[in-house]
Length: 358
Image (cartoon, rainbow, N blue to C red; front, side, top):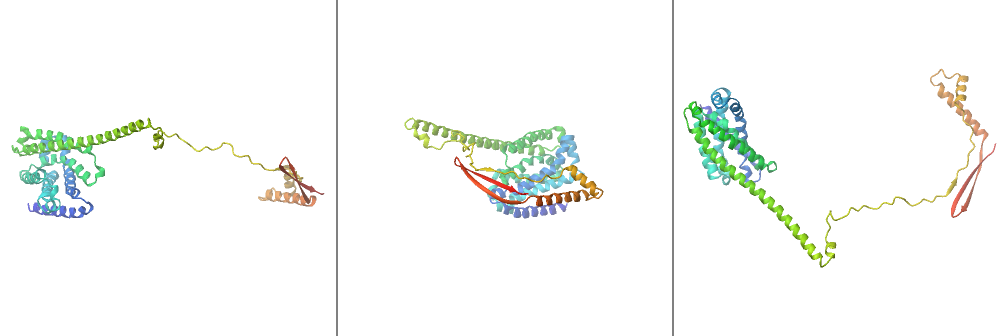
């Protein structure tokens, strides 16, 4: 049994150093007060999953008996110890009392947590921890609440209220009725303690849910009221403008128009551009020698017997072209150029002549 005090000391040290490290990342006391709540609610929700699944599949009796032994028994013992140390650290000693005392309420903080510390001792001594672990899934809404306070961007009131109603109201009522049955108390040593504790917790949960629901309705009503006020102010402004415009038509002209009143105006782009007046240019006909036909090229290839080689065709074409180029240079020669510019109807005409002499 010496392992339990050692575990308590280690858990408390873990809570303290975790808080000291993470508290530097949050700027308000309210946010820092939810650091340990997020850690505890996440841990307890995770530990409760096997008990919760067993309860849904096999009922309370088998869940209770399986939770007395094996790995489920170890989880039950660790869960009660962990939650008791969390409550002790949150309220009684350095972390809660010295760091964020103003965030711990009298009933929901000091009294509530002190009673639960005593309950954890009772559960550990009477082997009724499986009942507590079966109901520990109710910490899921607390995890959502803590995250919403640490990171406001993930806040969703409907999600929180829905999960709170499902787990801390409906599921809580069902578990309370099941625990209170005569047959259920028979294998729990005829103890009324689990029933009484679940009943008192249910009353507190109903009170919390009522407060949360009322706050949500008030916030939504305030938002709708602000929207209606803004709409009424816009309508009043329109009525004032209409009334004044009856005496002075220019009032609406000087006011900025709304997008609904302004026509869609786009720059006008002419479809026809200005005509481009260019002088009339006459291009002369050039007398060029005829290029060889394909038949002549083929005949030349056959005569020179260059078809057999890979480069024969290219060399034959080059050879034939050189022959025609030489004839062109020797046969024709450009001797002169004469330009004549005539002006007709305000337009200029340029005539270019080329004389070819054999």
